[in-house]
Length: 175
Image: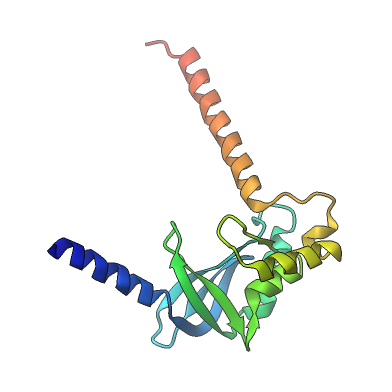
């Protein structure tokens, strides 16, 4: 019973942490959906924008997406409504600059996809539909590759390369 109470308390504490809003100065924009936030006490938090997925830097529109986010928030005071932590321990949330929803701005300008795997935000769905219709940003391309597919393809190629390397090494193993 004691273990259950401790578990419930820990889960409740985690929920409280992610129901909060943090503010600070945005910097080190890594790509179109990740940056660092320095809060008042000097703590630096790594933030991942919720509900969206921006192109990888090595992907078509990756640099444009990063530069767009950088132009919006770099060295500016922003607030973040925290939602969760991802598997890389980044804090995931919705970012606001002067009450403007930055996550929505990226999708509206064709700089990121609505990440349906992790989002049920119907407003973002509509915003992405409008960006597509107006051929904004990455939607200027005939058939842009979503970042999650790009990453999946990259992992598949890396796996094939590793398998090939193992086969070559076995072929020349003289032991």
